[in-house]
Amino acid sequence: MKILVIGGGGREHALVWKLSQSPRVEKIWCAPGNGGIASEAECVAVDAGDASALVALAEKIQPDLTVVGPELPLVNGLTDAFRRRNWAVVGPSQQAAQLEGSKVFSKEFLARHGIPTAKMYGAYDEPASAYAALRSVAWPLVLKADGLCAGKGVFLAPDFAAAKDFVERVMEKKELGPGGKRILLEETLEGEELSFIILTDGERYAPLVPTRDHKRVFDGNQGPNTGGMGAYSTDELLPESLRDTVISMIVGPTLRGLAADGIRYQGFLYIGLMLTSSGPKVLEFNCRLGDPEAQAIMARLDFDLSEVLSDVAAGRLDASKLRWKPGASACIVLTSGGYPGKFETGKPIQGLTAAEQNTGVKVLHAGTKLAEGAVVTNGGRVLGVTAAVASLPAALQTAYQAVSRIHFDGMHYRKDIGAKVPRLKAAGD
Ligand code: AMP
Image (cartoon, rainbow, N blue to C red; front, side, top):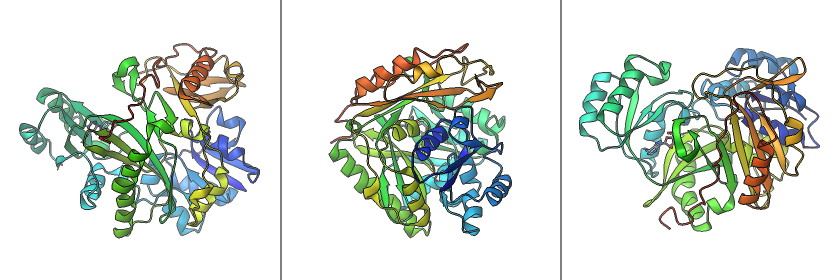
C-alpha cells in the first residue's frame, strides 16, 4: 500500500510513524512533511493549503490512500476534489468541515439537534452591533471569531473593556484576517476540559482514547494560548458513566444530526468538551485530530492504522479493530523561545538520539527541518516528546527524562503537563 499524508506538524509525524509500522505499507509520502518525518517518509515540498498542487501531486504518484492532517485543506474542500476522482481519502468534505470552519455553523448545528453546549448570545457582522450586545451579557464572556484563525480566534473576556478591545482588534483592525469578519458571543462554561475524538465512516464510528491538552504557554495555565503545549491520555480521564453520558448525549445526537442534515462525515471528528457541574457540554468541533492530542493517542495505538483508515475511506469501518495499549501516554511540547509571539528559527537541535534511548519514548517533530544533514528548528512548536508506558506518572516521568536530554537555543516547555490529577467526578456524575 502507498499512502500520502498531508501536513507537516507533530500530528502528521505521529500518523506517519504509526502508518510506517504497518506491514501492508510499502511507501509513504508526506506533503510538506518536516525534518523528522523525512526519516520515515518521502517529503514532497507541496504546501498543505495548495489544493490544486496536491491534486496534481496525487495524480502523479497515485497513492492508494490519502490522509489529510490539518484543517485548512479540509475547510478548503480538498477531499471533495479527491472523492470526485474516486480517490480513497480520509477527511471530511468541505460541507462537513464547516463544523470547524464556521463557529456559527457549528453552534446552529448543536442547537438544531439539541446537543448540550454553551448558550450563544448572538453572532454579529458589524462592530456596532457587537458593542451593543456587550451591554446585556454576563461576565466573564467568551468571544469567538467565526472563521479559522489558527487557534487565536477565542477570547475569554473578564469585563466590558477587554471584550470591546477584542472586538476592535478582530472586527475593525482585522488582526486575525477574514476569519474575524463575524464574531459570536457565548456564555463561559466552567469545569475541566476533555478531548473526545472519534473516527467515523459516515455511518459507524469508533472512539479513540480520551486526552487532555494544555493550551497556555506557561506553567499553572498562565500566559497566552498556544496551539498546545502538551497532552496526555489515560482511560481514567473518562470513567464509564461519563463515557456513557458523552456517547448518549453528544456523540449519538451529533452523528444522527449529520445524517439528518444530509452531511456524510468520513474522518476524525474532534469533540472538545467542558465537563461542567451540569454534565458535559460541547465547546467546539474540530474536523481533524488535535495536535498534540494525536501524538498522545498514536502512542497508545495497538492496531494497523493503514487498515482502519482504508476502511474509513471505503465506508466500512469496523470498530472492533481499534485496540489500545493499557496504561497512559504523555506528550511534552518543546517550543522556540518567544512562541506564541515572535521567535527565531534555524537553531541546531542536540540530543535527539539520546532522548529516544528509553523504552516507550518517541520524539515527534513539528517545526523542524534538515539543514546540511542536521536537524534545526523551523517553527514555534518544535518537538513533541512522547512516551507511552504503564501509568500516567510513569509516562510523564519517562517523557520529562527524555526532554532533559534535548537542547536547542531558547528551548521552552511546560513542566506541569498532566500534573493535575484527573477529577473522576468532574461531570456531575
Ligand atoms: P474553541 O476553539 O471553541 O475550543 O476554544 C478554544 C478554547 O477556549 C477551549 O479549548 C476552551 O479552553 C476555551 N473556551 C471556548 N469556549 C468556551 C466557553 N464557552 N467557556 C469557557 N471556555 C471556553
